[in-house]
Image 1 (cartoon, rainbow, N blue to C red):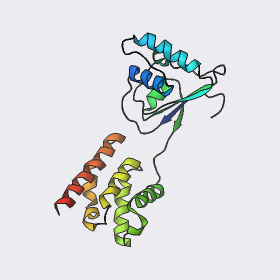
Image 2 (image 1 turned 135 degrees about the vertical axis):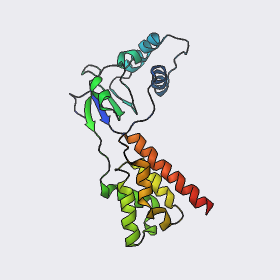
Image 3 (image 1 turned 180 degrees about the vertical axis):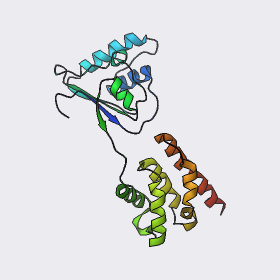
Image 4 (image 1 turned 120 degrees about the vertical axis):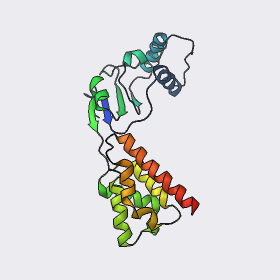
Amino acid sequence: MGDDVGLIGLCGMGGIDLDIRRLQKNIASLLERNLSDDEDTIIRAGKVSEMLSGQGGHVLILDNVWRSFSLEDVGILKPTSANASKLLMTTRLEMVVRSMGFKKVQVPCLSIEEAMNLFFNKIGHDMLPNSTLESLMKLVVRECDGLPLAIVTLAGCTKGGIDPRVWKNVDELRGYIRNIHDIEDKVYGCLKFSHVRLKQRDRE
């Protein structure tokens, strides 16, 4: 991270929405300080700013941000050469990165090779299937579009042994995630598929 870059935005998978007062409280907690819940948000922002100023050079990481917000409203210092601070934010929304003036760093999804390695690492290399079943599993993993959470969840279907019946119906998985363009909805489709398959296996 160069000294001339103070705002870094990692664009990839996201998580929960951002709440200003909760973020203020979390920052204070990390600095082993307290904020009163009864105080106005603006007053709290001033105190957070003072806390961060007292830290000297630092890196603040904001994870899973879903919407743009004012750093000033939270009390977060804008990085400058004078305060020697850096601010790193992760989000799945490129518009958040742009609207907040961050330098974008795109985090790509896994390649098919990386996805397969992750999958087999999760099921255990001692459980590698025969060539026919492996080709079917590759088709299933491809449907995850390189999304780690989806891959790990599907790998969980094979814990305790590989059942070929779980992997033969690739079209069933495609039925859950066909025409899905949103990343999180696609992950949800894979999670739903895994849940259904696990319930079927439990009944058997």
